[in-house]
Image 1 (tube, rainbow, N blue to C red):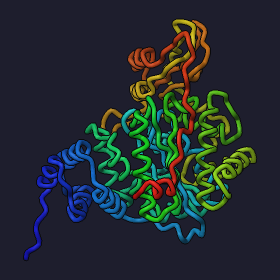
Image 2 (tube, rainbow, N blue to C red; image 1 turned 120 degrees about the vertical axis):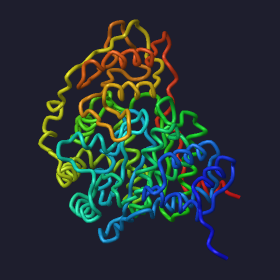
Image 3 (cartoon, helix red, strand yellow; image 1 turned 90 degrees about the vertical axis):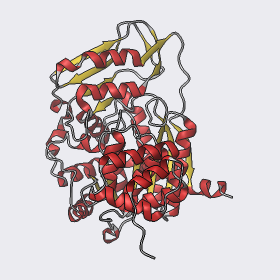
Length: 451
């Protein structure tokens, strides 16, 4: 019999109607996304159908695998080290990559990290790094290997040749209302991580008012989905469900988040950054443990603390940035490089406690200030963003500063100010605040739950 021709419109209709695609059909879709032989309109339609109908386990495996092999696949074996990485599902002020990557590398692991740009209300790791003058996020496989050989860690983006299908679909999800699908999130994350040739992976799955998946049950479902996918691929993996009910740390924005991370790596500890530091140490601890450099996650966390205090992690970060072409002289005084054209301080209209934060709204306010994109490929501001002066549960006096807004275009200040006033709730009673680490899910948990 002659080979049957696959038509994209048939795949859209079948998924729209709740049917299941074959591995061959998903391979056709992914190859078309990578080569751009399938129109963005048709890809967008399929993404929406997948968002509404979901994907079966077989479809998800086929999608992740096809995306993983849609371009080059990196092989870290010649480095002679265990390759480990961390990935976060995204949040506001989430900059843990800048801490955990150098910590794990300083512990003797290789950290080949493939990251993304701003998505929805959350910032992008690559946009933050590119606020460092000269930092290159697009490297060839040879350059990627050279940086890893020299510094132990490298953070890059998806090039034309490395997971190209995800680069196309990732950008489309941001502009088609399909970001929140756990299946599409899983395939996007895991295809990039598996393409990096990892031996171990730690996942930071956010839940709360600033997460893509606000509902805890949805976040847990995604975590289990990703752990099972990693288990099927043969890597050591763990997922931490973490609280995202307020911006993580002190700053949200591009250069602002680099500034905060540099100071923590220099062991300069601001009280508003305490939650960021603690989460980073826990995540790095799991990386060190899964990478075989500690007997358990708690011992890994202790090792991570030592590598911050000794300055070893900061030295790795400097080496990595320099190897990417970035100007490390700015790290001598990162505050001096922050030169916004306009700023505004938002103060409390009444006394009480900071009782709630609509963290997604805060993220959109940061985007409106210029730190995020309004269209695919649009520019982002290096110096736009937000500094939080208080954390959830803090006792506040009337007139006390709550946050400071920064922008490179002063006319942008009014709308974000209104958004932030609506996002921050002051009440007479302090709130109940969930633990930072809500749950840890490992491969053993997944295996024990299966029939």
